[in-house]
Amino acid sequence: MDKSNLAALFASYPRDKDFLDEVFDDAGSIRSQYHGIYDHFSQLPLSDFRDLFDYAKKSSFDQGITFNVYSDSSQGVERIFPFDLFPRVISAKEWHTLERGLVQRNRAINLFLKDIYNEKKILKDQVVPKELIFSSKNYCKAMMDFVPYGEVYVHISGTDVIRHKDGEFYILEDNLRCPSGVSYVLSNRMATKRILPKLFFNSQVQPVVNYPEALLDVIKSVAPPGADKPLCVLLTPGVYNSAYYEHSFLALQMGVQLVEPRDLYVDNNFLYMKTMHGPKKVDVVYRRIDDDFLDPLVFRSDSVLGVPGIIHAFREGNVSLANAPGTGVADDKAVYTYVPDIIRYYLSEEPLLKNVHTYRCEKDDDFQYVLEHLDELVVKPVDESGGYGIFIGNKASQQELADFKEVLKSNRRKYIGQPTMALSVHTTYIEEDRQFEPRHIDLRTFALTGHEMEYVCQGGLTRVALRRGNLVVNSSQGGGSKDTWVLQDAPQNASVSGEGIESESAVSEESSQTQSQK
Image (cartoon, rainbow, N blue to C red; front, side, top):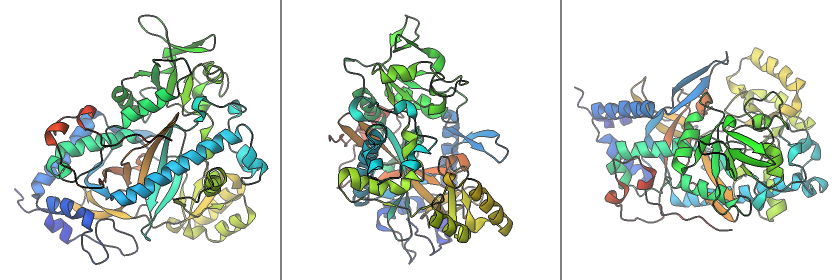
């Protein structure tokens, strides 16, 4: 049996000064917030660590924590979502800045959506080009001249954040339609508490387990007036959807019914759920079905996933939808370039978080720059998610560069270009090499907005590009994840008995966080 410990693996850890390593500084020393984690891992026998690693994989399999990975042949392959045992740590001070910036961004985006579907002041004032908005495939005519209850359009947002080699956080993109990934945040935390209980409870980490309760409070807050005990449901396309694990997980944690479209129907502009005891009126739908498939009477007539009449019931104020249809226009990657101006316009504040500099290919000057510097840029379609369609110029051959220039010329509106950001790297255990190696990471944060209610999950989904040198971290592209530890402001006494180390129950972790009121 191998009785050596992990210290030997750290001794051979490779470092690249072209990127910010979040665990090791330029001199090769451990950063202060990682001392306890490093010491704990260094003392573990290799055989014990590998047993823990195998246990984490088996646990993921037993819980059905999977995701679909799509190859060039577009065939979905379901696989275990890789989970790395070495957590990512964010200090309380850093998190405070991130949290404030996320709340600011979501407030401005909700005001922007209300405006562009109603008075359109920002377009009339030429702060954002009206052609950009009306040409977006996600601009929803069914939302025109209508304001949802509470004036909330984006109830759940998943904002992707990166740390550049300058040490600062940057917003990479907004995900405002049906953002996914929070179930992995919660599952990763439960796994960490089971596998590394002593390390976790000694580290003074902010809880994340209160997210389902906060999500339920948020969707209840936007129930139509008069719904004293609102009936909320989570609408899923079904078991074959790549994120079905998350749908069922969140429904269970919130204590709401998980429904498919066949379980719902509209009668007299009210939405009902079929039950063994007769129909029940539904007040709020947390929907995980894209706009195009939501209502065949309004969107795609061939959709078998939709609920006929649900949009009319929504516009009549008889049911609320979270997120509202049409929010995708605000996470269009070309509209993203205007979010700093949107913040200034509606809030009269300077943005607290920076955007990555972005070139819009539909603008002549920007397009010319992209063509001339394509080998230095990352080019993305404005309306895709999951890492699909990304072109990384410095990884492409001369022929691939030439071919992609023709693609850009054929549809300039569809693409934006960004400099190749030096995403920070993080110590990650690579099973194939049986080594700890640096891998690029980002952070998907989760923020909630309800009627006079805001909440930011005190952590997030740290996604890891598991292949050496790869910058695409998306799980759908084969990435993995880490537990994200946001440290508390000041040491508090950890109560092991209050949490229940072996418990997987969401109620076992006590929350020290409250929701802030506007």
